[in-house]
Length: 207
Image (cartoon, rainbow, N blue to C red):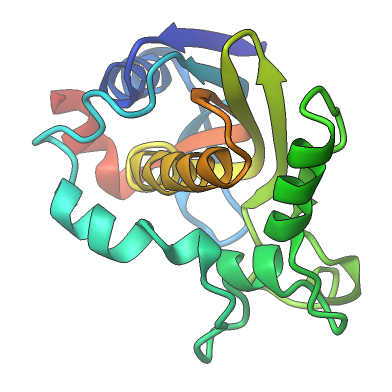
């Protein structure tokens, strides 16, 4: 069953989704042989992505997230990895397409567009390799008083990765909003498989 969470801040959303998965998530051993608890199609709508962004129960501090994730989605350098989100968003494919520049240009030209979209999935590569992007589809859309960002995530580690994902996405939203002369709005993630790995169950149960 799909799960919808509407929260004021990233910390509130994180605690609520972790509790929900630990309380009644299904159990499954994934394709790498790791046991997980999970929910399908978890939509989390964060009203204010910039208040209460990280709490003390999370393994990484806000300082680490700011230094490591603040510019990651805007950096086109692959840095010897199989892929990076920055590469896929800012230098996609052999054509080196800068999708973030396209999004900004589209929003400037037509603020009410439904086509300010970017993707990280490359079927020419990702159908042939093991390491593939989890954050797949980014949609920027002006609603009410600000620019909202909605992101489809095919597979999401909700305890270890989701807060870092949301921190980085918040920085991306802020950057695009500023370049397009728009106010920042809300942030929504749709995690098709929202899971917590067994090695994190003890910590997840204690928050």
